[in-house]
Length: 454
Ligand SMILES: Cc1cc2nc3c(=O)[nH]c(=O)nc-3n(C[C@H](O)[C@H](O)[C@H](O)COP(=O)(O)OP(=O)(O)OC[C@H]3O[C@@H](n4cnc5c(N)ncnc54)[C@H](O)[C@@H]3O)c2cc1C
Ligand SMILES: NC(=O)c1ccc[n+]([C@@H]2O[C@H](COP(=O)([O-])OP(=O)(O)OC[C@H]3O[C@@H](n4cnc5c(N)ncnc54)[C@H](O)[C@@H]3O)[C@@H](O)[C@H]2O)c1
Image 1 (cartoon, rainbow, N blue to C red):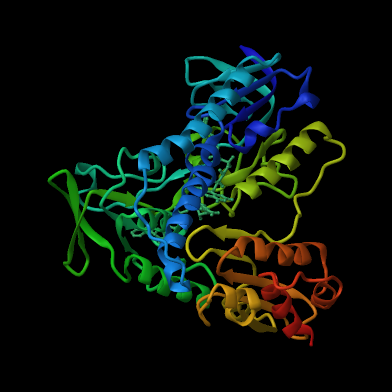
Image 2 (cartoon, rainbow, N blue to C red):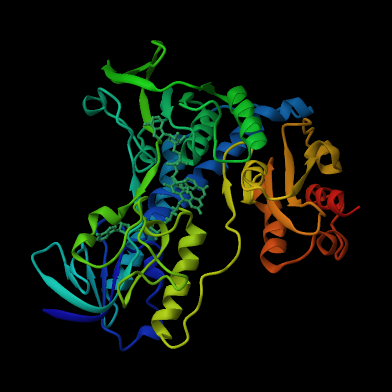
C-alpha cells in the first residue's frame, strides 16, 4: 500500500496548498472531475466572464436614456462562449499537467473515500495511507425535486454556460445567487427569462431593503414570478413546459435549476472515520481548520458556512501554514466575510443586516446613502431608492457592524468598509482620516460614513 505524507482531496482551493515548501513530501492529489474545481470551471470565473458582456449589452440598451444613441444588436453567443472557455479550459488542462509532472506528487484522477482515519480508497481498486489528509472536496449542485424532472432535459450552473445557442426562452428556478447572476446574464443577452421564486422576494438572505430593491429591479428587467414553485415539468416539443403552483404554464427552450448547493461530505466515507459532520453536512473544523481526527484538515465549501471562493482560498492558506508549522498553528480569524452578487444592479454585503441586528438584540443605528445624491450618481442618472448603501453601526456610531450596497460597482464600494471592519478603523477615522477622490462613486461611502459621525 502506498504511503503518503499528505493526501489532498479536491483541486479547487485544495490545489493551491502544495508549493515549493512541500518539496521532499510525498503527496497524493485526488480529483474526480475537472482540475481547478468549481470556481475556475463552472463557478465564479466563467459566470463573471459572462456577466461582463451582459453588463455591456445592458449599457448599450440604456445609453439612449442619457442621450447617447446606442442600440443592442445581439450577441455572437458561440464566440463569447468559446472565448471564455478557450481561456478557462487550457488553465484547467495546464494545472493538471503541471501536477502530473511534479516530482513527489501523484495525481489520482478518481473519487477518493475514507476507509479509516488515515486510509483512502482511490476508487480504482487501491488503498493508500497518508499521515495528513486535507478534505477540500467542495460542494455540488442540489436540484430541487419537481414532479416530471426526471423526464425532461434541464440545466444547472454546471452546464448552462456551455449551451450551443443562446436560448430564446428560459425558466430559471430559484431566487439565490446563481439565479440572480444567470438571469441577468441571459436576459441581458436577449433570452426571455422567467424566474420562479418560492419566496416573496429575491435574494431573501440579504438585507430586506436591498432584497426588495433588487426584486423590483429584476422585475423590470426580466419576468419574475414570486411566491410560486414549479408544481410539475414536462417535455413540449424540443423544450419544456413548467406548470406553476397556481396552475399557470410557461414554456421554455431551457430550464435552469438554480436551487442551491450541498457540501460533498456525504460522498467521502466519513462514517468510517472519527471526522464529525454538522447537521448541515459541513465537516466540523476548529479555528485552525483541523477536523476531529488528528492530522486531517478541511477547507472551503465542504466545511465552511460561507460557500465563497475567497473564503476557501483563505482557509487553504491557513491549512497550508498549519501543515508546515504544526508547532506554530495559525488561527482562521480574518474578520467579517464579505460577498457580492454580480447581477444587475450589483449587490455587495458584509456583516450584520438591520434585521439580524434587531433579532439578536444588538443596539444599533442605520444610515442610508443614495447613489442619486452624489455627483457621480447624477452623472449616471441614478434613481433615488434604487441604488444605495446602507450601514448598520453601533448606537453611538463608533463601530461599523454591517454594510450593504446595491448599485454599480457595489463590490468595489464595499471593500473600504470591509477593510475598516477587519482592521478596526472607526467610522470617524475612515471618513475624516483620508482624502476621498471627488467626484468619484466612493463619495457614496464617504457620505454614508459621515452620517454616522457628523
Ligand atoms: C455558478 C457559481 C458562481 C460562483 N461565483 C462565485 C463568486 O463570484 N465569488 C465567490 O466567492 N464564490 C463564487 N462561487 C462559489 C465558489 O465557486 C466556491 O465557494 C468555491 O469554488 C469552493 O472551493 P472549494 O475548493 O471548497 O471547492 P471546489 O472548487 O468545488 O473543489 C472541490 C473539488 O473536489 C473534487 N472532489 C470532491 N469530492 C471528491 C472526492 N471524493 N474525490 C476526488 N475529488 C473530489 C471536485 O470534483 C472538485 O473539483 C460560485 C459558485 C457557483 C456554482
Ligand atoms: N457571487 C458569488 O459570490 C456567488 C455566485 C454564485 C454562487 N455563490 C455561492 O454558491 C452558493 C449556492 O448558490 P445558489 O444560488 O445555488 O444557492 P442559494 O442558496 O443562494 O439559492 C438557492 C435558491 O433556491 C431556492 N430553492 C431551494 N430549494 C427549492 C425548491 N425545492 N423549490 C424552489 N426553490 C428552491 C431557494 O429558495 C433559494 O432561492 C451561494 O450560497 C453562494 O455561497 C456565490
